[in-house]
Image 1 (tube, rainbow, N blue to C red):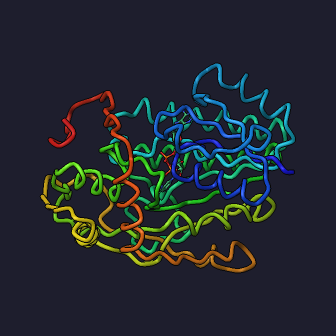
Image 2: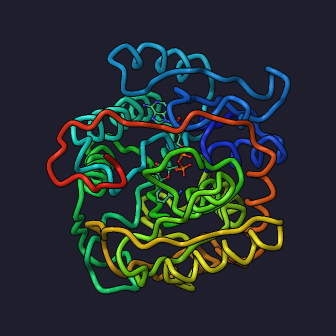
Length: 337
Ligand SMILES: NC(=O)c1ccc[n+]([C@@H]2O[C@H](COP(=O)([O-])OP(=O)(O)OC[C@H]3O[C@@H](n4cnc5c(N)ncnc54)[C@H](O)[C@@H]3O)[C@@H](O)[C@H]2O)c1
């Protein structure tokens, strides 16, 4: 039985991928500090198949605990998903963004170097910033916010570790992934989840600006097999991963509205102040689709995906909404005050 370490195991990617690995006969060691994911999102499996460590990877003491995990297990690969991915909020939580997303990742890079473990890092489409879409992997990164800078910094550090220490790695740049086990109680990220939670609470969906921004939403289930492939393949590659078809935020809101009605809920829309963000952002996936690489196929049906998520959200317990401590307040949007 091969062992795989998954950081961010209680989050969207981590909870789905841990389940996928278990169903394929792997042993999984999950790590998460439960700052953005929930313990009931973790897979239920006997301890010899799934082990969970509640570790904050950016904590200064984390390297000791992480070293034990890597030292006492023969780890085939480490999927590093843990991060706080609130791109729009990142200029107001710069210190936290870099501490959590850069220093946390550095602790994982160190372990993967030391224990000769392949590292799969989920970067983000955010590294492309305001390039003209569709973004392809040959475009030079030009992030426009601290979240994108953090992701790009780690991409560079991984490449340096590869050159100097022979670290094996694959970098994935996903975008706008949606699915059950997503955090819908965080008002700073995951637009589809935010819309659904607000509708269920009888609140209007807040559309930033004119709502004509475009994003390509994809169903998390299409990521699972390609991720598994990376355990043994595509060393040194960087891939965009996600759907080809882009929707405006207005179209997403219309979809949530239709799904809400079908499920017996009224859904209102309200336009509010625009945000500092890329207007149009989606990617080219030619490289990931190539059967010699990941053979990636995205079969997302947005309406079905939103319906699946809506029905799941209706059954979720009441949870406290996340509120971050802002490091600066200058220029913060009214809806986040
Ligand atoms: N979901 C997307 O659309 C998307 C798009 C681009 C990039 N990504 C990247 O993919 C990765 C996974 O995304 P996701 O949607 O599953 O996010 P998520 O928020 O659902 O999951 C991340 C998990 O990491 C945990 N975590 C955060 N900081 C931690 C820390 N310091 N120590 C330990 N655990 C910590 C959280 O508790 C959470 O469970 C992230 O790195 C994210 O930046 C996601």
